[in-house]
Image 1: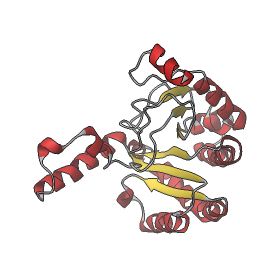
Image 2: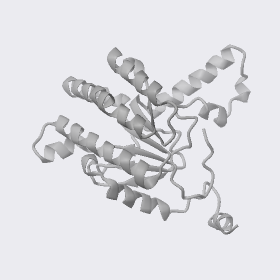
Image 3: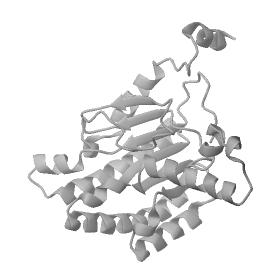
Image 4: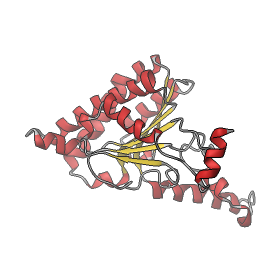
Length: 250
């Protein structure tokens, strides 16, 4: 995982929990699924803004958490269909814009046809460099750390690694998105102020931004407000303000 220990206010990696689709629909006396469809349009707008306006390198979206299986079966089924439809309709357009698509999480739990679409989308776009677009699906931060620890344990069992050689850096290398910079800014819409098991390790030094806006109402202006807030913050990474200012003046 890339080192983020610098005071730069450059926003390279943006991570978002897209919360509030169901409440958005309920306020309009619509079924919850209508909110998810509206949320997909907000995803399109956010990707466009990241590519065209903000020049962000990495965008990671919490699409479906490992806890979301607890929702009503009908809603989960509709979400799976929406995911497949989105892959069918959007991946070619994303590819044409130079966007690399990746899905992280326990994908084995998804229907085979969805797994096939994911694999095809990743293969088609794997060499694109304009934006790395990551969808966290059936993902949990605790699962991510656990699977990383398991990989290290397997190396120890094979005699490739000694337990005393395990470091934070070695564990970080086994996490999802290890080849990308850690998130600089985390946004959560919908008014909740928690990370909900999303990128727990990776968000350790990330700046947080919470908004009451429901996800379908999130747009380029909303994103700019979050980025403006980010740009005013001093990122010290354990150092003093004087040290940071000294680096800035150098």
